[in-house]
Image 1 (cartoon, one colour):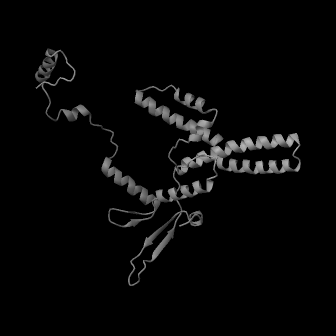
Image 2 (cartoon, helix red, strand yellow):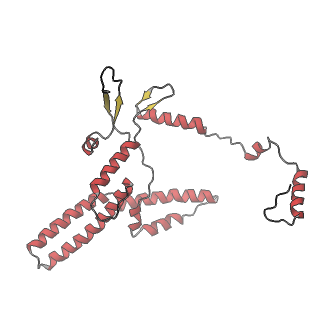
Image 3 (tube, helix red, strand yellow):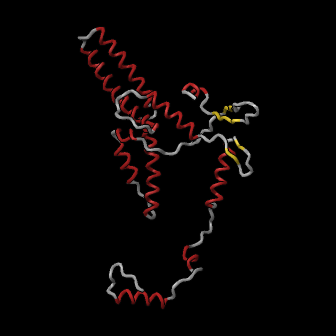
Length: 249
């Protein structure tokens, strides 16, 4: 597969059939549409470059939440995700296309400056376009580098094509196009595949129940120390002065 194949046929699967009397296995390629699902939350490093990032995080973390400490932490993280998604949609949704537009604007400003190098207005326009493109191209490359999870020696080189290539291959590897059910039959319907995953983990982890069994009820079913035995253990420990690390015989 190459980039042109992935651009035109991003979702496909190949089934290699028995070779029979030939010395090659025939391959049956099936094309299908990728089932769109909600993407999991992922923290983007470019968010930290925004001037409102610190204020957004502080505002989300200072929300008044009632409940135990763990519940407060989980609830604040959920609220913070909403605020960060909003920041992303406002400032970084079109970061790649913005960098391309800034590149073209810089080219136009430089061409205009070449027609009249001594023009002060053209000089200022070229400098502003250069600074704007420098910032947007850096953020664009940081964003693509994180998505591709590729390690590059230094930022500044134009590796956009390479990053996009890595992203395509990673998406292809993560897509589950077919899965065997318990009867050994291959299933290709995305809804059926999702159901198979749910049934598999329900069989391992169980299902949600409204009547939870308390821990002490399970503990009392086994052998436990009587109150007399507990008092003897405490007396032995206190008789040794409560030394750290002491274990009675």
